[in-house]
Length: 116
Image 1 (cartoon, rainbow, N blue to C red):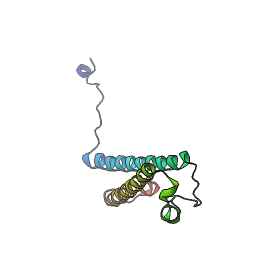
Image 2 (tube, rainbow, N blue to C red; image 1 turned 180 degrees about the horizontal axis):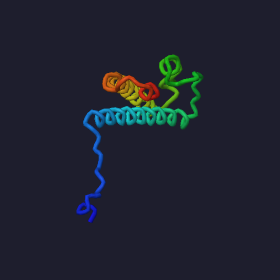
Image 3 (tube, one colour; image 1 turned 60 degrees about the vertical axis):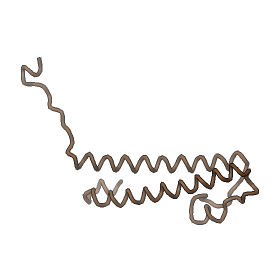
Image 4 (cartoon, one colour; image 1 turned 45 degrees about the vertical axis):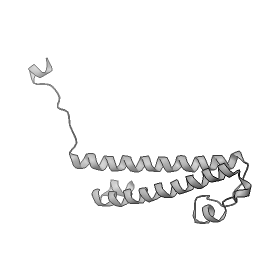
């Protein structure tokens, strides 16, 4: 009926460039979420074995490399798991940096971009 009357509203489909920008932003959000999950898992392992890290930020420059518990403080498989997850955090962080570089290129300089 709306089509016959000519009152059918048109659907707006964003241009390909805008869809690409949105996809890159979604990718960055997904990578950040993944990195947060990995960090939470590492914290969980340390809490299960009641290990307290003296660094204010376990994943900062000082915390991760210098204050991480020795292998003797964690069971072997848990220690291996934490080391693997630390490597994954580093890999995801490098992907986030690459994604942000691409976003710098494809997003036009404006106030909204600076807020992101």
